Amino acid sequence: MSSGMTISESDRIYRTIFYVGSVWNFCISIGMFLLVGSLPSMLAIAPPRYPVFIYFNLMSVFFFGCFQWIVAKNLHRHRSVVKLLMCAKLAMGGLYLYSLFFDAPAKELMSFLAPGMVVDFIFGLIFWRFLVYSRAKQ
Image (cartoon, rainbow, N blue to C red):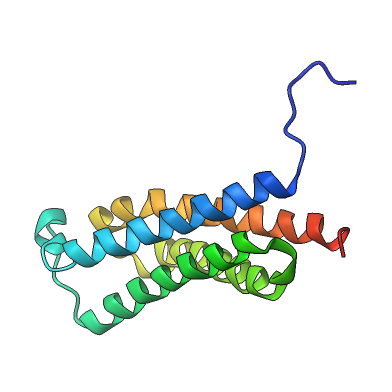
């Protein structure tokens, strides 16, 4: 037996994680929606050329929250939704890294987005772990 403390996987822990992820997405999407008009001036960057893309992205983040809420209600019934969420979270992190290396957007914008991208990437890995955990329960 290890002397360190470990957290064992359980439905309760994963349910909590999905609820926390849901609230995270709701807060981010609603908060950013309220700030989208003033954010470029706050970050001292040029306004977006295609604001519809920003609104589409915020709508996607909001629906990720809805999907996570649905999964939390019945963990093992919605594995396909978890796969979608996992791919979306990891893809968002991957696109962020790609843009860092190949697109070089404004440092201020990337610094603003970095914490959220890290959190989303971690959630993507947790979702992957949940899929491994829940496969054994089927």
